[in-house]
Length: 427
Image (cartoon, rainbow, N blue to C red; front, top):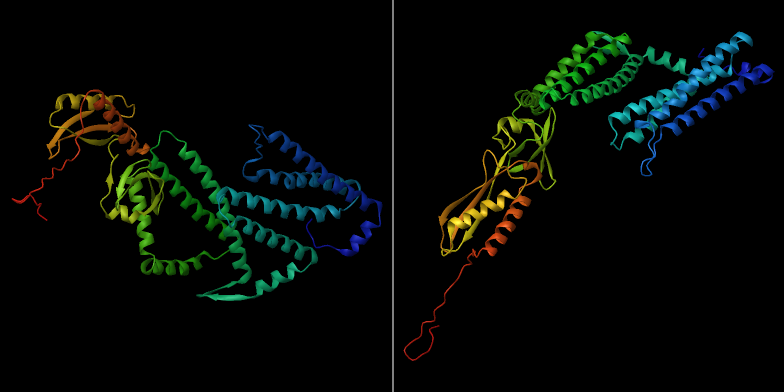
C-alpha cells in the first residue's frame, strides 16, 4: 500500500478517466472529513458568557486526519474492487498518517506540558522531521538512507550497535515516554479524586505508578526494536558512578521525599515554619516541597532540608492555631472589665473557635506606663492569614474600650528646669 511514487504511473493515471475518478474520490473523502470535523466543532463548542469551548487540549485537530483515513480506506477497497489498483489513494494515505501522527504527538505534549514555552518549537521540529521523512520516502531516498545508517556500526563494550538501531531506540523511547506520561497523568487524576485515600498516599502511589510505567514502557520499546538489553548494564554502571559522585544530593532529595510522603510528617495544606519561612504547603513532590507564605511568595524547599533540619508544623495534629493579641491599659482602669471586653470582642469573630478552647484574656505584667493584657484565641483557618484577624480584633477592642471608658496609656515625660539662685537656668 505504502510505496514510493512511480512517476510513470502518475502520468498514466492522469491520462485515464479512472485516474481522475480516483483523484476526485480522494478530494471528496477529504471534503467529507473536513465537513464532519466542522460539524463536530460546531456541536462541541458551548456558549457560556460569550466563551467558546472546543475539544479539550487540541484533541479536535486529530478528528480530521483520522476520519479522512477511515474514509480513504473504505474508498480504496471499493476502488480496488471495481476500477483496479489505486494510485492517488495510496499517496494520500501516508500523508494523512503523518498528519495524524504529528497532531496526536502534539496533543500528548500539550496534555503534559501545557504551559511550557518550548511546545511550539517542538511542534515545528516534529512536523519538519515527519514531513521530511515522508518526502524522502516518496522520492525513494529514504530506503537508501536507512540502509546506510544500518551499515554504520559502533562498538559498545563487547557488542556492536548500528546508528539505525540507536535512532529507532530514541524514537521509540520518546514516543513511549509521551504515552506513559499521558497514561500516568490520567491515573494520577483518578487517584487524586479518591476521597478514601490520604493526600500523601495518593502522591506516593502516583509517583510509584509513573516510575513503574516509565521503566516498563522503555523496556517494551527497546525490546520491540530488538535492542540488546544487556547493553543497558554499561549505562547502569555509568549511572551508578554518577550517583556516587555527582548526584548524591539529588538522590538524597528523592529518598527524603518518599520518606516524608510515607511517614506523613508533612502533608498538603500544613502550616509549617522552616528556615525562618512560615507558610502553607501547597505542593509536595519527590524532590522538593513548595511552601507558600501568606504574602504569596513561594519557597522551594529541598526534601533533604526538611528531613535533616527542625521543622515547625503548626497543624501536625490539628488545624487549630493559637493567636495572641496584646494591649495595655491604664492603672486606674477596671482590669477585670477590660479582660471581659476583650473576650467579648473575640467571640464576635466567626473565624475564632468557641470550643474546646474559648477566647481567654490574661493579665501579663505591670509595665511602667500601664498594665499589659493579652487575648489568646484559637484560629480555625490559619491558611487565610493571621494579620487580618489581629487587625479585626484590635479594632473591636479599641471600639469597646472607648465605649466603656477604658483608656490606653501613652508614655509621658515630665521635664523639670533647675535654676540657679539668681534665676538663670543651668545650661
